[in-house]
Length: 67
Ligand SMILES: [Zn+2]
Image (tube, rainbow, N blue to C red; front, side, top):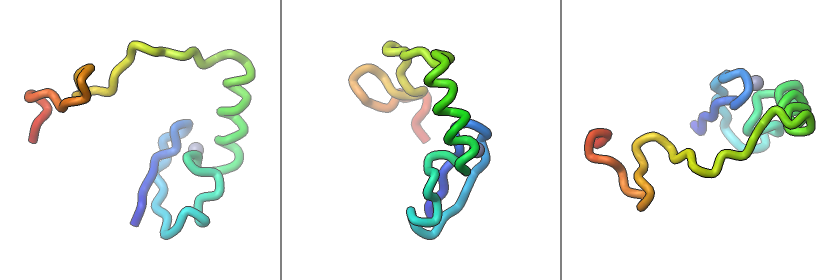
C-alpha cells in the first residue's frame, strides 16, 4: 500500500490508489492551501545547494549510509 507523508504536518497517510489522496502530497485541502499561502508570502526560499542526505554530487550513495 503506497504511503506518503504530508510535508506540512508530517501526517503519514496510506492510500490504496492515487484517487484516494486528491490533495497529495498533502494530507488534506487545508494543508495544501496553507502551503500555497506560504509560497505566496515568500516564506519559502529556493535552496539549490542542498543535497539529500546520503547522496553525493554524483548521485551515488555514500558508504557510511550503506546498509
Ligand atoms: Zn497535512
